[in-house]
Amino acid sequence: MGVFKEIIKDKIVEKAFNLFLINSYDSVTMQQIQEASEVSRGAIYHHFKSKEDIFHAVVNIYLLPAFSSYSMITDEEKKSLQEIIQASVKYRQNHINQLKDITSFKLTDFYFYKFVFQATEHYKDFTEQVSILMEKEFNGWRTLIQAGMRSGELRADIDSDFAAQMFVSMPMGQGMFSAFGDYVNINTKDIRTSYMRLYALLKHKFLLFLHHESLQPIQYPGLVLTQYEGNLKMKYLDLLPLDLNQQF
Image 1 (cartoon, helix red, strand yellow):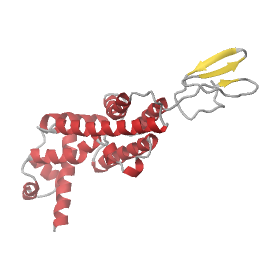
Image 2 (cartoon, one colour; image 1 turned 90 degrees about the horizontal axis):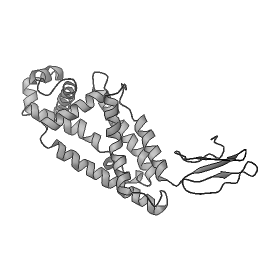
Image 3 (cartoon, one colour; image 1 turned 180 degrees about the vertical axis):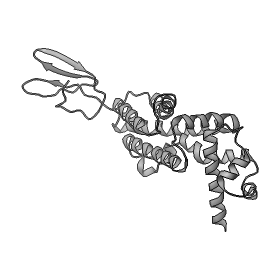
Image 4 (cartoon, helix red, strand yellow; image 1 turned 30 degrees about the vertical axis):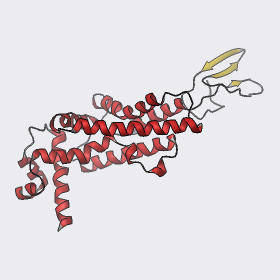
């Protein structure tokens, strides 16, 4: 009986999530939630006192986890910054897949951020909870970046606070860009690309002086030099590892 009740409760929250995504909070009614959930009015009020109560459950289950990826990753996956990037992207993709599975329409970033703005207005402690989650995210990323600086994985001259803030803010910033751009699907491809480019900038870079005969590299942080027909050419690399056969 207890399991059945939980199934009913989950269904109510799931269907309410769909309604709140498409419609404004004020326009959604308890009647609509009941009809979408295909349960009795008594079943609704057995689990929730009001529409506000349902809305809070929706935010807690489906929205707040989007602000926390580092906190959900296991200690085994936190061995290096590169591994944590992969794990973070994987967690975000799993959450996106969960949202897509329960929505009855094509989910886009626009609907997601529309819901975020509703939460700031109709969930009393929403901004405070997000701030707490974001602070935990920031501290987690910063700790790992500082560990990478000590181990040699990353450069020693990094501003760890700034780098951590970039890792925290990138997903939300790209989501906002997507919401008001031409993108139609929520995905983690752009986040993964941006994370790996940032990671490359935080790692050591090498200056290669490639003589056209010996091709012996000379290491120096920051640049790539090649000699071609007597002219010295320079280029900053933005991706690692370096490919000595790369054409500049």
